[in-house]
Image (tube, rainbow, N blue to C red; front, side, top):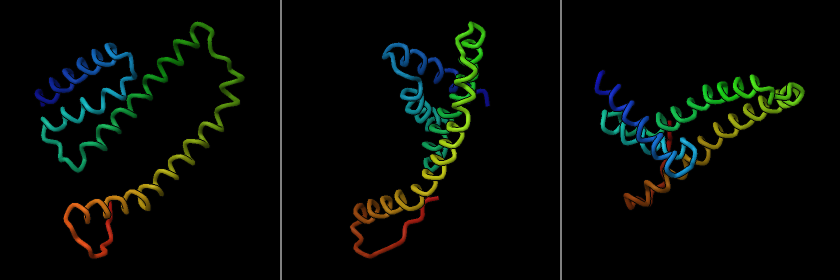
Length: 131
């Protein structure tokens, strides 16, 4: 468990340095760094990328909350705008989540099956299920 903590702290330091050095958002840097950390700590390959992207997305929530509080403390938040954007933002999340869930089943599963048949040289038609 200490090894995981050390690896995570090291990944955070590397991510922060690279994001600052290149001047880009942390998500573009943290996903590849976490991918390598999770490889080193033997996370199964089938779960590794989902765990990296999920971790990167989860970091957005505390970052957004902290940013909102800092801006509100300096009077830079317009409450009317927040209220007018609340429903469209939640609706957009719902629509986007539904579209992503449907696209994963119908689109990516087929792509995976085609790529696997090309890799193995199979000419038979098989259903690919990605879960």
